[in-house]
Picture 1 (cartoon, rainbow, N blue to C red):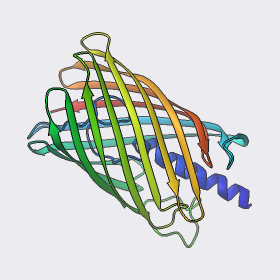
Picture 2: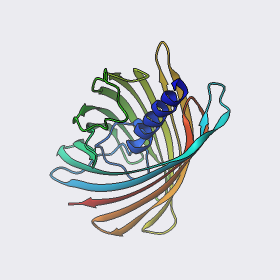
Picture 3: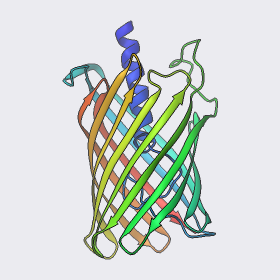
Length: 261
């Protein structure tokens, strides 16, 4: 029974990490896959983005980093929505939530350094419980989770076709959780093959820690973005786990439709 509870706990952690931009601050704009850009949405403009993800796993990283087979394959899908608006010059604010309405995520991004080739942004955010939880997954002594996050993004334009984005965030989590501290990091490389099509490759990772529980995972995510029209960007990525400890090992497919107004 204890082993089953550990696997359920790991599954919930992995779903949080995969469906919420790998645990990063949600609600802010991006230009590639999971790693957001440092620039912000223009003043009085906003974005609406529905996204769909499917996470599939039949293995689990153990404490030594090796993989163990699970008794059953876990397949979980999620439909989420993001709304982000430019509130001031170089400042945006946004929110995101899933159709399950378990948590509401908020985030803000401020571009502190901007020039022709380099942008640096400061990001802060958090999550609030919406109260819609599954009775089968939570124990009677469960308390709702709150999170507070802060970090930065660096975006570098190499030339008109090639660019790189990097992110690092720290999150403090209060409530019923196997961990209270979460670090997220990622690198994203984008190359425009044509005017509208961008090939993307990302390296994503996170580390959780507490006095008792420690885990980490690193994934590679190939994908693309396609500017279907002036107001619609289509995003697709396939996140593949390559290293980890105390986490599920699997593949996460992510599709997003970013509409600009």
